[in-house]
Length: 388
Ligand SMILES: Cc1cc2nc3c(=O)[nH]c(=O)nc-3n(C[C@H](O)[C@H](O)[C@H](O)COP(=O)(O)OP(=O)(O)OC[C@H]3O[C@@H](n4cnc5c(N)ncnc54)[C@H](O)[C@@H]3O)c2cc1C
Image 1 (cartoon, protein in one colour):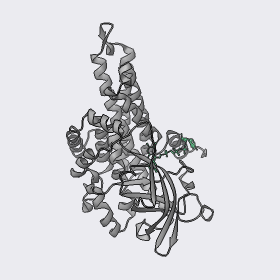
Image 2: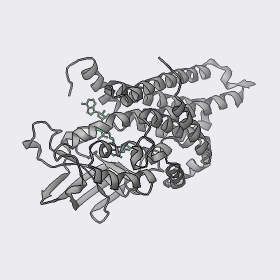
Image 3: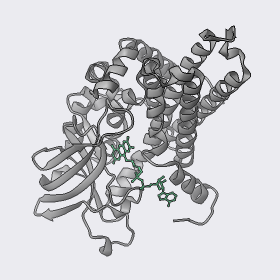
Image 4: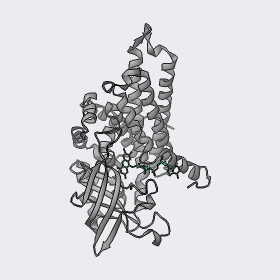
């Protein structure tokens, strides 16, 4: 067993920390305060070829694994950009996965290069207001008409839809009552986000204002059947293939954010003098920070193990879910303890930890909640009866 980062992981880590030096705290604070997409950051990541970090080389990608992509996302989140930086590119890193695995060569040739080059952005339209985590219950329907589909429905929380050119869309193509399982009869599409037929309405939210999340309303959107990935009615299975890498990446992002919060807290604890001594001399300040370090290190090992399993074609569901759960908790606790360490200043925007705390809730909630991960581990790992 070897716990060292590989040469390629080290070189990703070094290159990304160098790249992120161009974006300081004031850049991320401005994006947050003004709710502006970090386009300069996005462009720099794209021009460095990083959007294709784990895409195949033949389409312009770097052909690296989820292990390297998770190092990259951790480093990006750790740079001060938190979830705003990570989410600006997150979907482009794992989202095209179903195209790579299940798309035909025409689809791969026309869809992947512009995504990898950063010429096109894509968003992910899965969640619906009336279905929530019960994806099999989605109502958006794609009705077949010759070689076209007519799509009607609604999605919620579609991140980056304000800036995206394309959407990966899950829609029902067979009514629920005709399916053996609720997750049957769904198809996966990748198509233009045509705002003539898709109304995009931003959701005002608690944090990560730089990266929009939206309700989208799809009315009579006609698309070609060439925009369907793989076989009709089999879309949920294709999507499942990209769920584990997404969980691993979001875990890495939570760790990066947590490490940044911890660094800020430690610095402040050393510098802030109260009662004639540094506040960091008090164990009530030290111990939570020491615990944060332990938890973040443990989470990093879990991410590395999950990424190793995924990249080597081993079953990775349990570890990807566990890493996502544990890293989200560790990141959230580090951000919470950073705010406590800074006292009143923890609540001030100029010290950045309040922004990190608001953003640290995202990995706990999305793309799957902590409770659903515990359901998964209970059932699939411990063999307990399904509870829902
Ligand atoms: C910032 C942000 C960005 C997002 N971006 C996207 C995106 O780009 N594309 C997209 O498709 N979606 C996106 N999402 C949606 C996200 O994936 C969902 O919010 C998440 O899957 C939870 O669904 P829900 O909010 O409908 O919760 P619900 O399904 O309504 O659940 C509410 C609560 O009940 C709990 N619960 C429900 N059923 C059970 C059960 N059986 N056992 C135990 N607990 C249960 C859940 O764990 C949760 O705590 C985003 C969400 C956020 C907050």
